[in-house]
Length: 176
Ligand code: HEC
Image (tube, rainbow, N blue to C red):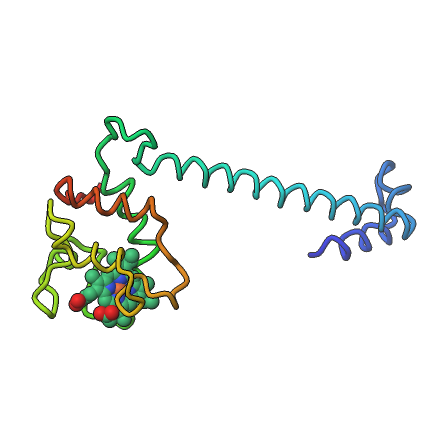
């Protein structure tokens, strides 16, 4: 039931309780009530926006890359790497067989470490420069660049650094 129909029902209801009657009896009061509801809704949306953006900032600073470069903590697959792959790669290299491109699966360990068609490897532990995944995300060639530009989900420099460091550190893969 919408607010409007609810207030209309209430206004025509002869058994209104004492405090409701003066508010809901006239159409101006009804409009005022609706206006207050709309204002409340704006605060609600603003609240979500603020919570969302601070969460995003916290996520950013939690990426594992320390700006001063001193003793950065090791990259965590679950915390740092998987979310990047999920957000930027899984649409085309994820669980959906029908949408998978180049037969490459990055949502399973077997898939990510499997040999590619050209017999290259997407991930060569400790060797980012031999890892096709790194060559693709760092490529200057628009034909090779991953994700493809048309996906409109480019990786940030920080995210590329996280993936490179993950491979440098041995490309540990854990499911928890
Ligand atoms: C919009 C779909 C799409 C997204 C998103 C995407 N890819 Fe791709 N990817 C493709 C297609 C299509 C190919 C095959 C054509 C080619 O080789 O460029 C491919 C090929 C690749 C290859 C080479 C596979 C081979 O057999 O040589 C790698 C590695 C790769 N992608 C990694 C990634 C990574 C890492 C991400 C996320 C950061 C990503 N892709 C996101 C569509 C996508």
